[in-house]
Image 1 (cartoon, one colour):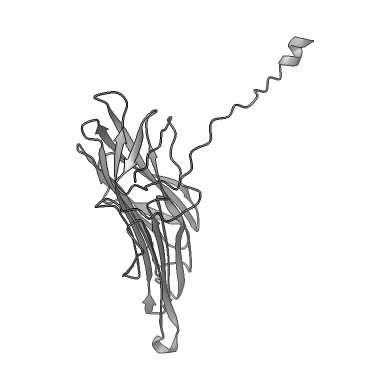
Image 2 (tube, rainbow, N blue to C red):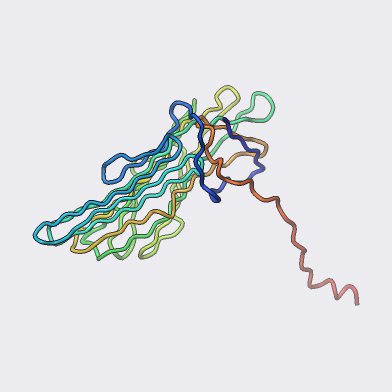
Length: 274
């Protein structure tokens, strides 16, 4: 079962109904999750996990939580983690999701060659007490390779209770990491990796990863909520399409609506008619 879609200079965005597909994916296609270091999964197409651990040191009840969700058909990853700390005793929750697939591009004419970009948009909120220093709350990457190049967009997101900071350690090739929003508690960033493909070498092997950490440096609870999803999309030239090794990548995305024309407001028209 393969999936392809024709495009006309628009971006595939991720929304709509998420469903499981009973298909046998190609080798290398994977959706996996890990909560608090313990692997959880349903099948290679869709995976989810949820775990809570409770501890009672010194008579205090401290917990760590992790929830993750990954779907190739939706092209999405969600990760939410929280952890408690009481003076010097702390338990950080973690959650992560991973997507891997092979995309094959169908081009136009013969001897075609073009650039393809894959994007991933991350949205998250973090709450908790003011931290002693910037505290790692999430890290994410979008990486891959074609026959001619490797590209990796990566960022580490930190929070101190008053705002966010980040660095792009590990990024390489043709990539961009663009901060879309950064407030006291909310953060959004878009990762883009670009690859050259051609009629002879039309494949892109990619991996998308999101990891959330909920751990506090001071007494209290930090919640790292990146459950708004990491949303993947593909930017294709007009007339190009793709299939995937899994047979389902982005298949939960409905076709974009056709463009509509709106009437043009011309305030000077009545003057000409008088």
